[in-house]
Length: 324
Ligand code: ATP
Ligand code: ASP
Ligand code: MG
Image 1 (cartoon, helix red, strand yellow):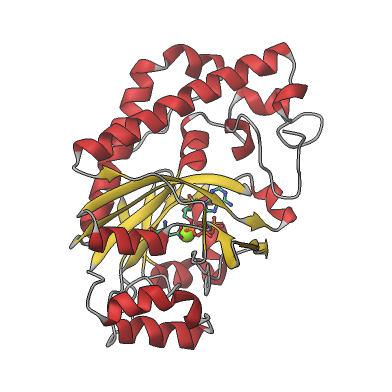
Image 2 (spheres, rainbow, N blue to C red; image 1 turned 30 degrees about the vertical axis):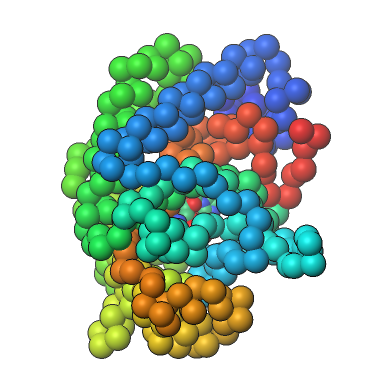
C-alpha cells in the first residue's frame, strides 16, 4: 500500500485537491504524475511499434457508448446538450467511433481517450471510479479476442519492467511495490465464477487472486459479439488482485441485423445509432476486435495508490467537485 494514502487520505478519506496539499504531499503527487507520464508514453510507443495509428480523441458527439445493458454500470446522470441546433453527448467511450474508424480509415487504431461518466457519488468509496478518466482505447480489423489479450499481456509485462528500471526513485519515494505476475494470464469464464462466488463474483474475485485474470463471456452492450447459436459472448475483462477490473474488450458485432436486434432487445434507442446501422447495412462495418485499458486504474496499480484520485493532478472523484 502506498505512502500517499497515509497522508492525503487521512483527513477527508479522499484525495485532496492539488492546491491544498502540503509540501510532503506535493512531492508524492510529483512522483505519481511523473510515473503516470511514463506509463502513457510507454503505452503509446508500444502501440505504435505494433503498427497501430494514433488518432486524436473525440469529446462531443451525437453518438456515444450507451453503457447499456451493463450490469456493472452505475451512472447517475447522462450529459447531453444542444450545440448548433443538434444534441451532443460527452463521451462515455469512443466505441462507435472506433468501429467506424477501424472499418474506414486504418486497420489498427488507438486513442488516449478522455471519458466523462457521472458515476453515482457512492462510487467514490470503491477507490477505482472517477467521473473523468482516460482509456487507452484500441481496435484492430480482423483480429481475434485472443490476439488482443496477448497484445495487452505483452504491454503490461513490458510496462512493469520499464517502470521498474526507469522510475526507481519515484517508486521508492511512494513506497510502491510493483505488481508481480507471469504471462499468459489465466482465462476463466463468467459461468465458472458464478458457480464459485455467485452473482457477486465481480466483488469477490479480486479478493481471491494474486495475479491478473481474464474473464470471458460477459453479456453486455450490442457491440460485443454474441454467438447466435450458443449465446456465448466473445468478450473479456481483465481483473487485478484486490483492485478489480482494469480492461474491457471484445470481438465485435458488424452485421446490421444482429446489432439492430440486440438494440431492440435491450431497449437502446436505435435512432441514436442510425449512422452506424446505415454503414453496417451497406456492408461498410468490418469485423474487428479491441479493448479499452483504464489509464488511471493502471497507474494506480503500478504505484500502489489506494484511491485512483491520487494519480490525477486534479482529482475527479464521484460526488466531489473541487475548485480546479
Ligand atoms: P466498472 O465495472 O469498474 O464500473 P465498467 O465495466 O463500467 O467499469 P467499461 O465500460 O468497461 O467500464 O470501461 C472500460 C475501462 O475504462 C474499464 O475497464 C476501466 O479500466 C475504465 N473505467 C471505466 N469506468 C471508469 C471510471 N468511472 N473511473 C476510472 N476508470 C474507469
Ligand atoms: N473501450 C471498451 C471496449 O473497447 C468499451 C468501453 O469503454 O466499455 O470494449
Ligand atoms: Mg467493463
